[in-house]
Length: 539
Image 1 (cartoon, rainbow, N blue to C red):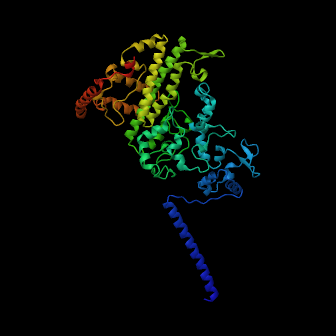
Image 2 (image 1 turned 90 degrees about the vertical axis):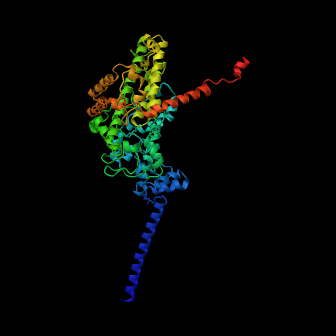
Image 3 (image 1 turned 120 degrees about the vertical axis):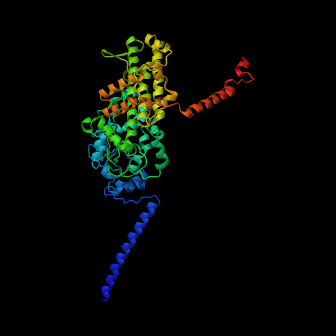
C-alpha cells in the first residue's frame, strides 16, 4: 500500500471514528436527559414559519408560546406556525401580520386540526362535548343573572361547543393546551376538572373522593408518564383510571375514541334521566354503549362487582326520575290553581324558568333540584362518590321536595297541607321507590339496624320488585340486570343479613354506646353553670 492510499485509509477511518464518537455522545446525552426527566426533541420549522418564530422571540411577543411549541410533538414532526395558522382571503379570522405580508388565521378551528386529525375531529363533533349549549342555555342564564357574568363564566367552559363560521364545532385546545398540545396535560383529571367542577357537575370532586382518585393522587400523579399511547391490546400502563381511561382511551378490548358519548348509557345531566339515543345509528343503543364502559371496568374489576355497581347506579337514576316527577307534579298543580303566576306569550301561558325566570319559589326549587342536587345525586352514584350521592345529592333533593310541599301548604293547597301535618315518616316519600337487597359488596347490615321504611311500608319488597320489573319491560334495565336483581330478591334474607344472628361486635358496642351517652349527659346535657348569661344579667 503506497503512502497516498494509507492517507486515504486514515482519513476514512477518522471519519468513521468521529461519527461513532458523535453517536455515542448523542446517546449519552439522550440517556442523561432521560435520567434527569428531560425530553430531547428535534425542531423542524419551514422557511415560511421561521420569520414568525424569529420575530416573536426578538420582540418578546409571547416567547413562552414558542418554547411550548418547540417542546411539542408538532415541532418534532415539522408541524409549524403556518400549517395551523395559514388563512385564505375571506376567512372569518384572517388578518395580515404587521411584520409581514402573510395572511394569518387568528383562531385555528377544528376544521384546521382535521387536516391531520380527521378521525378525532369527526368523533368529537359527534359527541355531547360538541352538543350546542345554546339549545337550552337560556333557562338559567338569560333570566336570572347578568349576561356579562355568563360571558366570562359559563362560556369559558362551553366554548368547547362553539359553532365556528367555517362549519366546524368545538375547541380542541380546551383539553390539548395551545402550542404544546401535550397528551399528558390533556389526560390529567384536573384538565377535565376545569369544566367538570362545581355545584352542578362536580365530577373532579367526585373523582378525587372516590377510591380511583385516592389511589391516583397517592401513587400515579407526578410519578407516571401520562403521555403514553393507549392501546386496545396492551395493558393500561397506570394503576387506576383517570377520566380519559374510562371515557376515551383505548384499553384492552375497547377501542379509543374522542366521542365522550360512546360509552355513556344514560343522559343523566338532563332534567330527566333517560337511556341515551345519541347517534345510536352509529354508536348503537344504550346497552352497546354500556358494554364499552363495562369493557373498561373489567380491566380492573371482577364482573360481578362491576355489574352490581352499575345496576345500583342505574337504580339511582330511575329513583331520581320518580323524585323529579314529584317536583313537576307540584309545580304544575300550583300553576293550575293560581298559587304561582304564569306569563302570557302570544296566546299561550307559561310557568317555566326558561321563559319567565324564578319569579316563584317552587320554580326555583324545581330547577335547582335538577340542575344541582339532581345531577350530583346521579353522577355521584355513577362515579363512586358516596358523599355526593347522599349528602350533596339525594339528601338535598329530599329537603327540596319537602320545601316544595311546604310552599304549597303555606299558600292554601289542601293536599300539601295534609302531607305537612302528617306525622308518618312515609310523608317524605310521596314518590315511588326502587331498591335492591344488600349493597355492592354483598351482605348488608339490616339485621342490626334495618331502615324504618322496611317495617312501615306494607309489602315493601313486592312493591319495589314491581317497579324494577316495569323498568325492565320498558327497556330501561337489561334482562341480565333483571336476573341479577332477582337473584338478590330471591335470597334477600341472606343479602339483608336477616337470616343471621345479631352481630357480636354490634351487640357489644351497644353497651359502649350507652356509656358514651351517659358521659355526654353528665358532662354536657345536665351541666349548669353558676353565672347568668350576659343578656339575662343586663335585662
